[in-house]
Image 1 (spheres, rainbow, N blue to C red):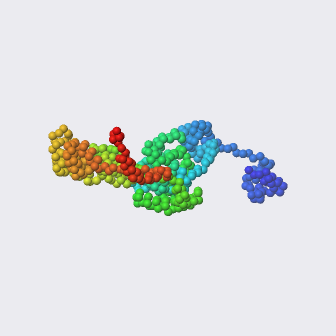
Image 2: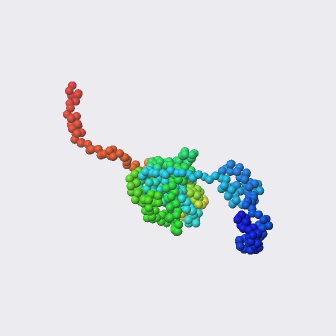
Image 3: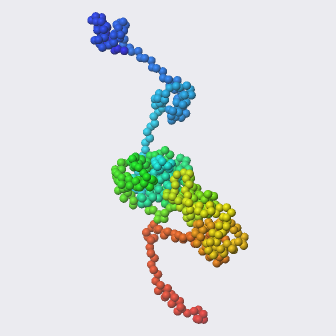
Length: 499
């Protein structure tokens, strides 16, 4: 629509100057059809008639959208689109999102209080996942602990996020820092938290035992409250964005070797973005505020009891590990750390395997099945008797005695073979000789004697007194005072003599 001034000029040029429509259009740079329309109308229009807005394809569904938002204010555009499809809406999601931005109130930004910590007061702990690095199905996880005051960082990579793996990382982190904080803040880890209702929580029994061993307080951050553990969140981001990109690793040990070098030479020597200080230098002042570590180590192994299968294997961490075939059906204890899996019969280690972090694998040693194939079938009992008899005269005498007794020959021989596998046939021969000399028979006596002879007595750790005035050495007694008392007692007259 032309302005009123342009319309008036067209009419002036046409009526006063007698210019043609072509001349007027060229002089005013207006389309000839528009000039002709103004001349035919013969008057200036000042009121502009606005075009009626087009009806949106979404408008018939505005009521349904409002009802859906009343029911669930944070309902996503995709969720609403699926509901609208069911009532005949054929439009796209872009117009729907534009409409939701207009009618859905924007959230007020949440304000946070800055958390300040004293030296040695707290540390924060978290995990970070880095995916399947080696292509074998085992995911790599990063354990990160940050001291809240100095911002000193500890990082270690593992292939598990189990509680024993967490405790092993904990132990090495505490040794790295050289002391304990009074509080340790965690995310809602399933290995640490057993149950939670709001701000009330219960820790898992194994973590309670570990916390009680060291004497620190465990705190769980609020659900979805990453700001409460911002220091360790920043630590995980630092590892993810500054250490991880562009590196190549041979195995897990190589990852930790490179991580230790990066941690000691770069991460803890950088000028911290928030504090403006170097964490390694600030730790010098914070170390005096840390609590001392206990001298005795905490047992962080994966431990459980099981029975050896007929295929002379034990199941551990979704894998199968072989043991000597003579232990089939026997109860054993399996212990695992970051590198090895040990199978124990009682307190005696029967075999050791390198730990496998894959799933569904069979880890075996050929020596564990040695002799089984040759002695299967009817000849096996004869071989077992001959094997026990070959250990020495005490074992042959033992077989002669139990042959005429009430004990099960099959059970006795099977148990003796098991004990020989664990302790060695020479030690079994010597122990049976000692028992026969005392007049005892029975494999239960043999096993008890072997365990007692093999057990090493453990002295309790020395008592550590925390108050200095209690650490004193009593003076040595003067034995001459006892001599004078004895002499005086001898010189005193007896009451019977006086009478």
